[in-house]
Image (cartoon, rainbow, N blue to C red; front, side):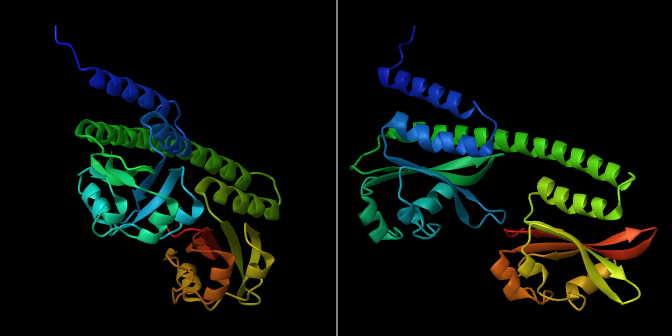
Length: 307
């Protein structure tokens, strides 16, 4: 019978413990919070962060942290750090002296926060590197080879937990989406007054699609312009900014073309860019409202983050 070294047994126990914790919930935010809170506690480090790549796969954004000041977390991007580049290439990186490490970003913030050592490991989801787990200490620490391998395996397990939680969240979202569509369908086929139906739609669609707001404008053939008939999630100031009849986005939508505005603050198809910025509107989707093959208005969906 082969006897395993005590240290290996300790790591296995730790691995099992962390795995149980991070798979105890299918809520994505809770999974992330459990990872950054419990991993430092179990491994005897001071802090942890998780950064995931955006949809383009080019930029990292912070999704969870523990043990660090808001000032430090707000110091700016770390995408160009050598340790990050290596980790995103699949190589775990241990840094004994953070301030002397080549190409370290924001050294003054690191000094002020008291960070001495770092361990950076890739997070893998669906077979691809999708982010990094960083462990930070406020005392110099030389991470041993077996510790680095352990953290790398743990980061991979974290990726699986995040992936499972996201799948569950997406499935749950789809169920809620279908339920909401059913409710909207019932409302449209009900004996409700038209205004009640419109108000129901602008309230329900943002809820299920995670939007900032929603508007419905119907075309008035007598006056020859669009009237705002229902809205949700938007200020009176923004709604009263002026007519959008002459916007390029409106023209295209009224011709039956779906219009996607990725950045409402710069896109030339949007007239009131400053108002969008002040309101916190990032992206807009505008689609025609069609009744009996006739376009009668425009439905606009607005987000607070770019999509």
